[in-house]
Each structure stands twice: as structure tokens, then as C-alpha cells.
Length: 116
Image 1 (cartoon, rainbow, N blue to C red):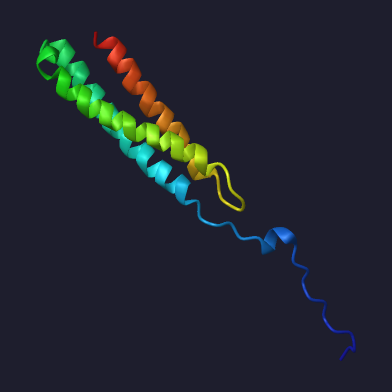
Image 2 (image 1 turned 135 degrees about the vertical axis):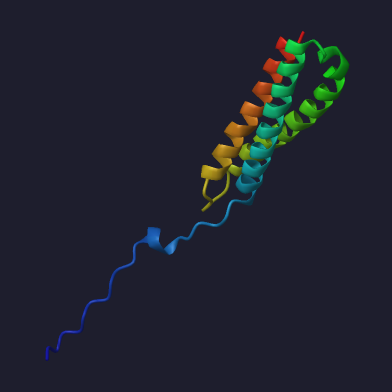
């Protein structure tokens, strides 16, 4: 037997700091996914309606649904931006929600410009 005690493992500061959940980032990601899916399907419907000639009949309804989904994407962008700030928080979900929110707004803008 040795008289020397076994050394204790040294913990580094990075092991001691645990990351907190980023609730703004998670909300941004969920809203970005929902908004981009909704705007994509409204855009798909608008494209089919334009090809078949019945866009003037349902254009207002598609604009209202698309605008609502775009607003969800806009809120997603805001939440994603706010989720980037804060200590000890994972920023990956906030960045993903921010990007999806921007994509949602861009898709809606392109569809409205091309539907004229």
C-alpha cells in the first residue's frame, strides 16, 4: 500500500458552467417552422391559382392567411434576435429560428410581388 492518496480530478471552469435552456430560441424555432410551412403552402396555392386563373377569386383569402403566417415569421425573427443575448444560453436554436423567420418573410414578399 502506498501512503500517497490518489489525486482528485481537477475540474475546469467549462465543466462547472451548465448552459440554461434558451426559451426565446425555442419559441423562435417553433414559430419559424410553423410560419415557414404555412407561407410555403399558401405560396403553393397562390401559384396553382395563378396558373389556373382563379387567383382573383381567392387572392384576398390567400393574402390574409399568408400575411398572418408572415407575421408569425416576423415574431420568430424578433424572438430569435432576442434569444441571441443572455449568458450561459445555447444560441443555436435562436439562430435557426431567426433564419427561418427571415425566410418566411422573404417567401411572402416574393409571392406578393409575383402575384401581381
